[in-house]
Image (cartoon, rainbow, N blue to C red; front, side):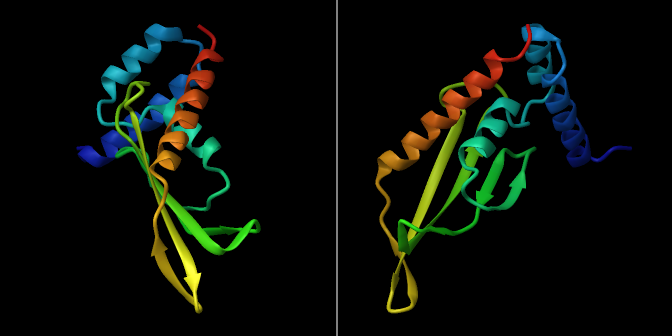
Length: 141
């Protein structure tokens, strides 16, 4: 007997593999219906593409979670950022992705939490959605 977690993981793999086939929109709808609870593959790939500057800490493709680790950039060596991305739907929808950004500044050798402009997360969500739409539109129908 297959455990539910393994079954969900296999469904996710089939969904991702199916997106590379030439099944078209009908196949995408069937795969999405069969894989409730599995992250949308276009949002998943778009997130990885958009957030490629940050190192991945861990992922959960079945739960739709990507945790990124801290990273400092040469333009601002006294601060670092990390992010968590939640893919909330198996369908490609505008409300299907949520980004949370964390920021810390170095004060006297200690990393201290700092505020993040709320627009930052929204801009990242929009970039991920734009990339996901581009990926979907480039698939053969």
